[in-house]
Length: 353
Image (cartoon, rainbow, N blue to C red; front, side, top):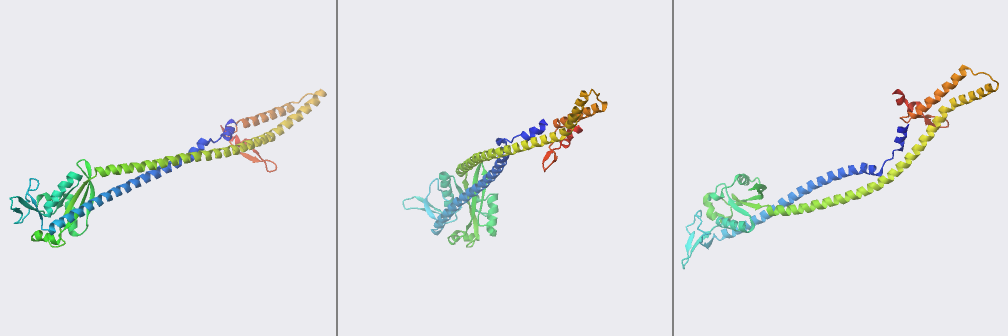
């Protein structure tokens, strides 16, 4: 019976109720924010790639404009220096000239100019670019495997550009390549190589170091993560507070309901006790009255009468034993729609043991 009432009297603590609701919320919130972080990372990756691609395209356009200007002028002459010697791959009878004052000048065609511009850009910004071709005049312009695949696709007309991120010398680089098509001004030098206007003669390959971009990306992504974690922390604290308040109110409501159940159980147990004990007590009470009369008339007690008293005492003792052995809560109908505890059913498990 102690176990029976301890189950009825066991209150639900607000903290335990709060955890019941709060833990699933934290799990769902964690999964949601993990998905948001993954989505944000992919979004940042796309943003970084687009930024690099826009930079490469802008650089490509500037290179093409500069090359076109050079080609429209049939090349430009610059003074010969150790940094700008005559181009050994330029087949032009007027490649080198001498001024009236004896200074030597050499013609810089678009390809030679592109190579020198690349060297300047590399020193100032770390970018590298070069002309590449499947059939280069200058061996320096031979493409690597990735560039060769892109050039073949350009010739077939499958793609108009190609871009990808690579690991190179322990750091990340962004490689971009776009086709180099034959312009009208290019035919002066390249018509003899079998090219026609609009043909893909090669490509411009651009390599952009990503160290600075990765640093900016990491800082931006870190700020985003911190913001998201702050929102998550504030949301968690807010929900924890609301959950605890609601759980406290719910616990009070459960406690009141359990009080009603305890009272109902006590009333039902009292009813069962009265119902079960009334008959043997009545019999014993009547026998005591009979014994009193016999004592007054000095009549002896019979063995049958003593056995009746003994049986009723055993019966009451058995009822008390059942009350002490209650392990379950079973009721049965009584009078006027009331219910009382069914001692036989409620202590059945204990009886079997």
